[in-house]
Length: 344
Image 1 (tube, one colour):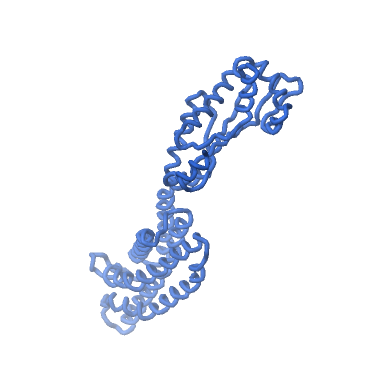
Image 2: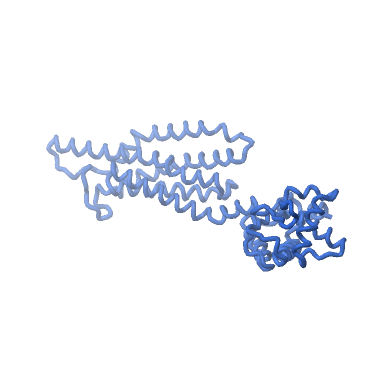
């Protein structure tokens, strides 16, 4: 029957640990609560199977002798020794510890009960709803110290917080880039460098859909790392522009010409003609360096290639196309946006 259900749903099995801690099984109400909780867990529509436990086997053993395992604490402890010594039940000895005087038996703390479900049921983040449903079912039977644990739940937790983690880390990385570039370039240029870097990451986010890349741990790392990689393409052009502008102002001062007549557009053109080829070569060699992992059998490595290659492409485009335009018309060296001129 279990195999039939598996074939109907498709996919493969996964298991969830029902972890209960601080149990006092010497109390009949606790034993009854555990028994009822496991039975109710079995009735959940997404649970295929609650694997046998020593408690279920012991309950069947006492029932066959006409005894109720939840009613008499002494009978529970005394008969448990006989149960663990009986042929066919000795495998449960590792799950429970009993005192030699037959008056006290207890489980390890915490105790794990295993349930099986179909892994192919819905997207990862939906498993958190199933986890909450299972925990509410267990607590509804009187088990307060209980939680459900599964590998799917762990990944679902990450999926639920991945956007917040991504945006937060990207924001901190951009702030760090702005502070560092501000130490070496005028404020307006540092601002436009950060804008270009942010746009590169925005382009990467947009390309993830056509590239069939989901926002997961690997792509998250690439998005944050892209900020550090892409800043080079913009900084080289910007720094060259600032050097060209400063050199032309010095030349005007030495020649006695009127100061303030340096055209930022001409400086941007010279910066692009001086450094543009180097930026293109740097992007091309970076692309060649990661090209080999494009043919990897690992999805993680192929994802890394997709994200890194797009970082190079967008970094070069923003560095040699958008950045010179911003420097020519909004660098802060002219009055185009009403910004006061400044010297480098």
